[in-house]
Length: 386
Image 1 (cartoon, rainbow, N blue to C red):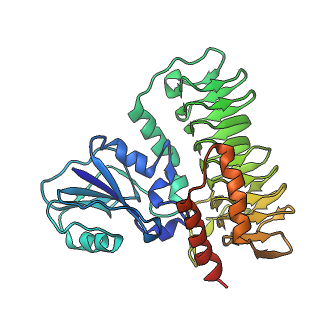
Image 2: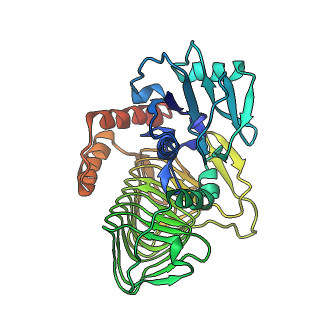
Image 3: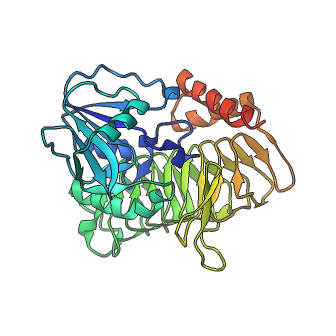
């Protein structure tokens, strides 16, 4: 059997998916794609994406299960033996197709979803809007931890608040003395090659991805992807991976993309002074999130200088450089070089040259395909807005 993971309403998740498909977004301990494939270990997995990713599609000749990137399934889907549309919270998130024609692109998938009449509600979580990543992160992380059921001896020098069974520390992780892990509200999973230095505090549900370094940090209910550098205070956040927040400062209820560098004392607001619901922008529409606590969403390769302040509900595109300290605008499109008093477009060749310096620092080489994605994003973001 074949399982096909496809992008779905991807416009709702800008600016986080400018340079990779929607199903690579991180929620809990895994990306959405990794979470889906966990339940179909023996299946052949393929993907259907936007055209810019040039995703190769093998011909489909046998019954296939299509699963949306908005779905975080919590158990394996079993089949009814006929064409069936699957729902989470009454919203369509995929289907089982028994016979041809099999959809080969996003347009055909939408058509097929309308045609299939048999429906079945399945177990899982629906990521419908950008802020759902934050809203669902803790509950998804807890469920994933319970599925793994991993056990490992906890070093005696680590101070644990709560049950030790809710802590997993990979064998290749290195935890210094004077580190506290609090699992009274949820589990903590520390992956391979993680380094946690003295005077760090981690409260669950939290996940620390492989190769990340935690240095004198206070991390509460957050997911830190691979090869990040984290210091200061982080609460209810997702760091996609390969990003730095190494110094003092607060980041809360936010999603930070890849290759982001947050300068010393960079701090965001995640609560309005009147405790009202936070509004933020998706596309050109400003929407009410329904959340009292909501921070910022920052695209890949964005950098903030020391003393940067980020307003509640901010949307910051990819390849943004903010310098000079002070309050950033709430909405900043990609490829901008700006301060509180001036702004200009970020030169494409200079942006790529900087990324070529940054990425090898995490042992990642920029591919021609990735460079092509940057150039395509630049054409859409800068030229279309000029």
